[in-house]
Image (cartoon, rainbow, N blue to C red; front, side, top):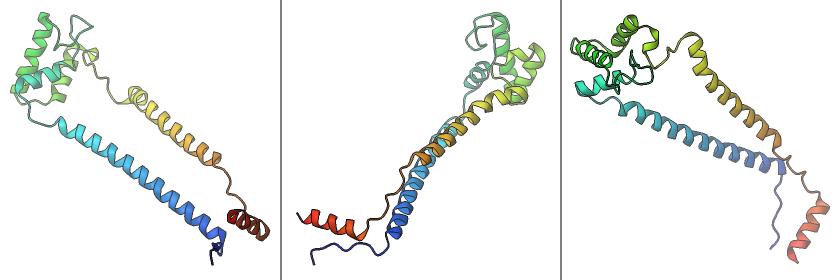
Length: 171
């Protein structure tokens, strides 16, 4: 009566534990994905509030290099050329142009080096995507390695070993 009965089939309990482990692992991945989605969503929504004209000019000028001093943005530089760039940005915003149109105009007037943000196409796009691909490959490699390092399941106990274990438990 005080004796614990052994499961009828040890394989069934092993598969049940394996299923529960996968379920918990899936929940962990789901929680991480949800947290990442919330973080990216918040970041994306935080930047879409209406801005004043001065804020818009500063935001665009902060992405543009000063034409006369290469180490500063047009927003932070005090030179006359930077002031002219800011005035051009202001005039074009008042005319209803978008940030992309203004950046294209400045690039056509001052050359491709005027923009601090490199274009996302061609070789530059590869430079931006390569680290992401490497990170995904590293995570996949770690997942495969961790699965291989998992200890093999123990062989089920024979009737003799189970009887010996029961006697040891009882004292």
